[in-house]
Amino acid sequence: MNNSATTRTITKIALQYNGNDKGTAEMVASNYLLSTTPKGQFLEMKTVADRNLNVEKWALTGYISQPDEIGRKLTDEEFLEIATRALEKIGVTENNQFRLDIHNSTKQKHIHFIVNRIDISGKCTVKSHDVGRRFGEAVRKVCKEKGLLTDVEIGIQKKAEMLKNLSEALKTSDNFDELIFKMKEKGFEIQLSSNVKDGISGMRIVMEKDKNFQTERVYKAGYKLSEISNQLKISEIKSFFEVKNAVKEAQKYAGNLEEFRENLLQKGFSVKIQYNGEYKPNQKNEMQDVWIRKIEQSEKSHQKNGLFFNQYKGFFLSEIGSNFQNLTRSMSDNSEINSLNTQPKSPSKESVAEIASELFEELLKPNYVAQNDDELWKKKRKSR
Image (tube, rainbow, N blue to C red):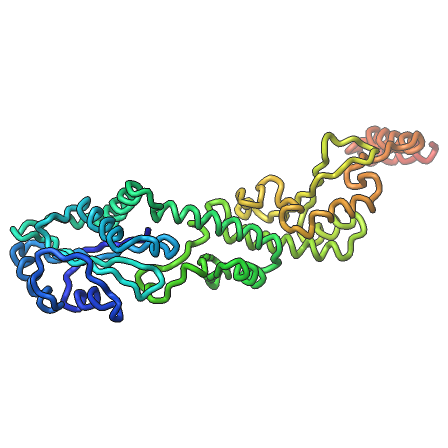
């Protein structure tokens, strides 16, 4: 349940807004207010507020808004009960002036309140310190008591849904434009931010059904990528697309795994084979997957673990795209017996003898000899 509360100095305009809402506002509660006009109610509140000149921001204003799927199920009386009980928990008493109005002109049904922090005896009953946080906690507590989902619980559900759909869309996208289109089909809007140094540097995801242009200035819908998951960062998504495109390009000109690895190596990527079970030399070993990672240029450029990325191995070929799942098997079938990992052949007896002779000759040759000795050494070599 979204909510907001802040202390400020108001004018009659605040009361006019509360009681109008394009003609759809409905006042559901008021306390110690005799006038029926915004101007008259403001004068009554200001008269009481002047009884305590130590408090400059004498009004508490805010709202409570449920998501559409929940808010429309609540009656006006239930909405009012949530608001008044939450206000009581932060210090509003039966001696404080207030007015509460339900607004229906926007997508989400919500309730607005204006409260005089100074009660009729001149005492300030609502502390301003952390009032927004305290009010939010009060609303959540009341919602739990009534068996309703809180804004935090709803947020957790939405973030999980966003991450699930984003992961699926990434596997079928090769760039940010495709990702935006795929997420649009799933009912989400992706908003990208960028800077001169890094290019695309941030992402925000919004559920289409949560968009509310009437309250955008008060409440910005959606969540930043860092709020959705601490595992997935924009840098990992960039690397994800880079690897996918490199693999697709290398695949075009590779008939087997050896050629595939060589093509990726030329593009600055290393390839590591993961076998199903223990590797056995000179035999056909079943390949489980392929790890691909960029060859780092420096220690500072090392990427940390992410949703798809393993800092020690790289990206799993089968994980970065559904169209790559059968690539490993097809190229493995066209390859010689594990040519990437086959041990080098043993040298023949002739080659061993030649190598030993050369090594022996090098060992016998001194590192430094006098000129006369050197000439003698040359004559001996000629005689041999």
